[in-house]
Figure 1 (cartoon, one colour):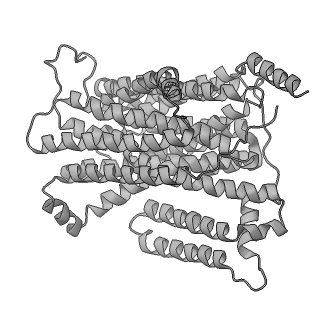
Figure 2: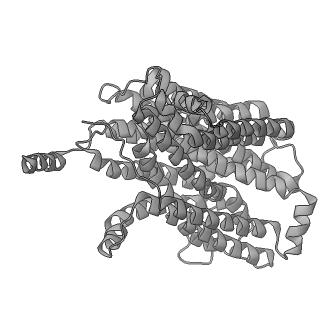
Length: 532
């Protein structure tokens, strides 16, 4: 009997096919990513050269970096809203479609307001709302199209999904700086908007083919209700240490808001939210077993699984600090380097701007994903090394730190007065991209597989929220170096401010990789794919 069941399962696995609706989702994502990266990758150079920033010329690069990272924070903060709307009210498809229309409106504002500060920032807000709101939904929507009979194909599709994202990003990164230089910002921001409209149309065309997982009804055993029960439950003869810890987090959150909200609203809100999540999660874990008296074991175990996942996400935040600065810090560094026009292999007819170096990232991703799957991972398995998701993510963190060591060494040469070729940036881009493939592409699948069914949209939102916190660390660090005492310490090191910060972020990534590796050794991997 057992042999028959195993044979049937093996036959089903062999006959499994990639769902026919997947191309619509991947096509939608390719167009959306072209639109997003097209505007994102020209945002910093546009702001530095425009009249929208009310700042002296010497300070414009720093202010442009702050605007850029604040925008990215918004993009990766709004997934909380999108995940909540999807999980509780409208479902993934309808929420994605409606927020995509908001997204398109943001591009209209951007293209029409390149000389109007209020209109331009309104466009950035709408793009952050639309792009951020759909982020946790599209990748989770891909997972919904699979069940136990074909879940082994999900990794292939997630890799193809990520490959397609970078296909769109490559052309956007390469072409939009050219359009910005030759046709102006209205055209450069308008073309990505047109691609976003096409992406929305492609999503709509597949509407009759998708597997539509309905939104979750009000659940008496939801994550928040189980956590609330655990924190408030009384046990005879015992105190409530978890409630004390959660209360302390609330007090610290209020203090951070009161202290920072007038000087930097974004930093204040994110720090307050982070304190609530961290202390609330710790407090809940201390008393979680008390919830078993009210809630079923599966609900309590689901909360514990979510809390474990959030620790993984928190340890990944330093990676995003490094990764997203390639569109700000590295672009500014590239502007201080020289074009290697004398090199026979340099495509001078095409590469006219340092911002175009960002096109290296997606094209390397498109090469590395098949290389890893077809060559590297099989070779490691033959050597007896199991290439788990957590191991890939930990190694990816370390590679991102190595990339920034190389970038810092380049900066030291620039600060020393050398005319450094822009071609040297290929090395840090290659290292950072290898780290990205190990962290980001893996994280999409990991986040979906580890999330209990009722929390998939929310968990994807928290995964994306980790990007906001990565960019928060950049804002906090940039604010810190404006302090005279910190500036004096950097000067005493003998390095310029940029080089010092590059070494700092590299150390940040190495420390995170070490902590991630220690935590991953004890992480209990789950399997939450739906049944066939």
